[in-house]
Image (tube, rainbow, N blue to C red; front, top):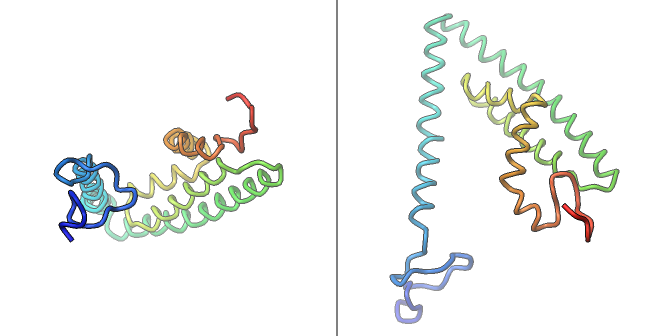
Length: 171
């Protein structure tokens, strides 16, 4: 196969991007390093921080009390996820009935789903982040961050942060 496919030793990969003269993908090393760093933080650093906070709470208020607080936060969080999720669903339905694309509501739904997932992870840090995503003022801030981050992708589909753009409409 090495003689059939120049530079790579195999068939070209769709969407793999430009190749350097040695056959490697340009910029692949920096992306791989960034992903490794992100995964290291998510799967090693965050659990260690959660464990450290849980042990500190257990030392301060007691083991049984720490477990009770973690369970109560999870139960309260499940109720809040249900309430916030239903609220987002109603807003999404109202937006669609008005003939608009529910961009903000979809992002809010994703943030509520993320909050629910974070509440499944035992720990105080993830619970604080999850509860922040469940309350409308802090969720609105997170929504603005997400929409700003993905604005170029939304605009590629003719959308902005509040619905479909009409042809010829200015900004």
